[in-house]
Length: 622
Image (tube, rainbow, N blue to C red; front, side):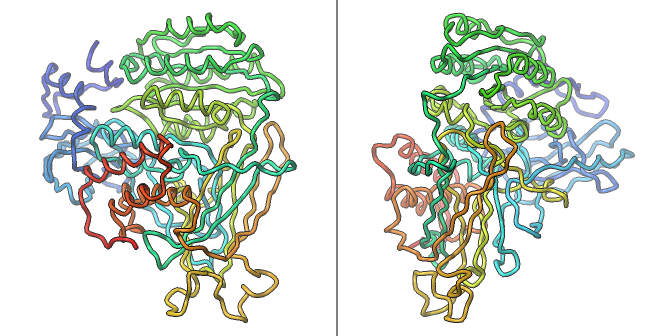
């Protein structure tokens, strides 16, 4: 197998550009990229532009210390793991003059190439994950690491409630970020900040389930307490529990396994892991369910025609026969899978394509914008999409995230067989059966009690915020899912020496004591549609302004605060710089369930992160 097929690239290095890499040497370097990048403790970030100040995508970047060849991302920015605090780059692209420059890893690199190329086209408009009415946060530049790509995110800021009291976010069941973060930490590596989505870290855990009323799809609860990393502020917990389907009334499923069998999937943590994962899923199938298998690699083909779930032996045999080879025509595979799903469409049933891949498409439509347009065409057919990501080094998180969110679906990352079992066996109904579509939560804060607030997680993509017409994108919610969202709140009486731990301390003439806001910190509206129903439904809830001491919160909420702090420390969030890894570890240890293996594993991840990221010198939380 050649270097080009291993890296799934068609381009060839131009020897006339003064870049000389011997083929055998390049093979060794590229083959060891995944292992060696894991040990790097520095990341060089920057962007490449042309003479007209336009960002340049897919520019070649050669790191001299290692000889590794990288590329700028789809937005022209890059993040490169490096072994030391200084290095030298050679930057080149067809039609541009080659540039060699020394770099300081501690500084953001603004690289300009002399060229006659036209500035890249403006990206297509997208949908937001969270939205504060009438507000557009400031942009910042995101990055990629090695051959992996992540969407550039802008962390949510504190918002003045007097000017912008209303905000909202999508209700989703995505959990991919947690297992991906675990993969990096288990390799002993630091993590790209944009790979850390705090809402997905929280989604990974069970914070208690309370069944909704019989006449509703959701149940909402809230608690208010001290913020452990900033005791002068408050932390508002909002929990949303979705209805569980009656096992006896779960509708028949029409499932299409869409499996990437390209040459790059020939690694133990790729196709073999997926084959094991799908074999586990087969155990949950019933006779009324139908399974098809579509593959794409050297060609796009139907590896298993629609088959009853009762024929488990036949399905397992088809899964076991999958072998890797060829390119990655992801677009053609997606089109074929949706056509198969539509041919077997079950009216009133669960029609779903389950895409399993590293996301590194290299034939047909390959950009995030193109793939988004593709799946949007098909979601109106009533076919859902679940994305299962695998692999490292060339893993395209940004593409799979777009496909899942735009294809009425969800997204998970499988780093090992235990995770595959969790997603496709233990949480099978959450993963595969939706109880609500286009779900989003809108919250309005009482400005008499709240000075500023900040939604933790649910960060938007940079280029989505740049589109003035963007609006919130609701999410798909699976059976029995429990979501916990956190807001850090600065009380309106902040700085009052007589203020107590009870936020409900506005003056007698404020709106807080009037009939309009009496005893209320905030009001919530949850909007959603039932599957295959166009009617928009609303549930409402009122958040009490009465706060309780942090130690009196349910242990699961205190544990959730340690997860939020963990994510903030990994992202090096400026909003959590008062705390350090010792604080996150202490919070988790004091609130964990000793019988919960997932919580115990999380504590070990904090300990690994503490060693990797080193000690900080911030003030300890109380």
